[in-house]
Length: 146
Image (cartoon, rainbow, N blue to C red):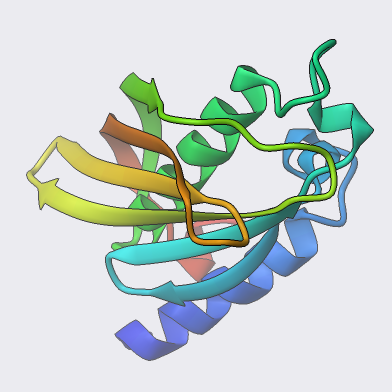
């Protein structure tokens, strides 16, 4: 399978998995773009994403950041687990906002991949900056997963 076929397979994989009743589906994320080394998702903020103050819960912002940066590793054909995640909350957003999360590869070795992520609101205001390290557990190719 060439790189383009692998990326197309990942896109269809996320379309399918986001229909399942798992955590990614609970969040309601939708893939916007996927290229080797970079991925972006969007999230329409609803009540279920908000804290008692009516703003997006920090755990939701951390989750979408981790999912986006982790998906960036998948574009390299690697199956991973999160080792560490550092997140800086810059500003918050309200219910009704449309958030965009962008993950980008910053380094890849034999056992560890490092990524960075940013989350923006619909006015392109920066909400979150994050970095994460992922341990490579194997490959993430069409023949390796259902």
